[in-house]
View 1: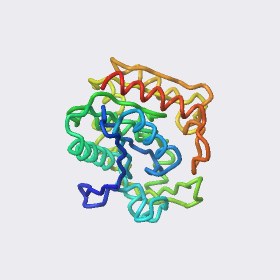
View 2: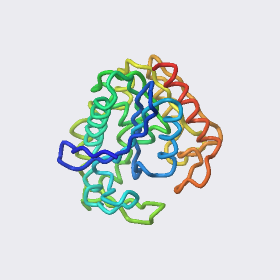
View 3: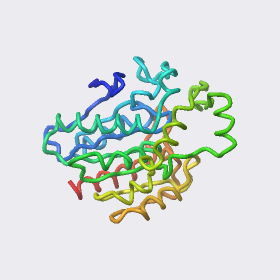
View 4: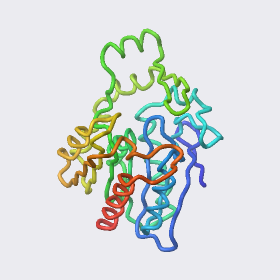
Length: 264
């Protein structure tokens, strides 16, 4: 396990799994209401390790996870999370991990919002060899005008965690961040500027992010491969805790490992 400080001075905690001789470094970024120990992330890191990669998974500094690895016990931090904060966290983790594995080609694998964050962060990273998105968002502005108007009037937007049933409040910080940094948070614009190969994977049965968003992402990148898995959900049919490995999840991991091998 490792711990580094975010640029706000908050802890960023993560885990590294690596074979004796790694051929590549893969940093995994979780999405909204996600965390490094959710469902398939530990399994995925282990799978990548067995495939010859050093795999890093971590909690964003404002994920809401505190000292207990599977508990959202820092909702105060969650409330003030922003896209820009997550981009900075990912950049800093990649740079830290690269110091641990100097000379290895670097890949990022981002799930859901983490995919969008990976695309936004890519331009700030040296040594990036490729980027993988799973179920990625294609736009940062995800709320209609009525929701944003009420959000600003109330000062908070409550979201429910389907797993824990917790009500997780979000302040207007993320709205302010987007409105002040629209150009920097243009996911499709960042995708068009990407200068490394991209693998975009999505489930056709995604109940949270339409597969069309990955189709858009792939269409904007000059060197992209798109895989849409017809029977896969947002989490590739995995649940938390991961009681078994669905075929859809294993297929996504297999293709991702082959992508890393091809471009490492």
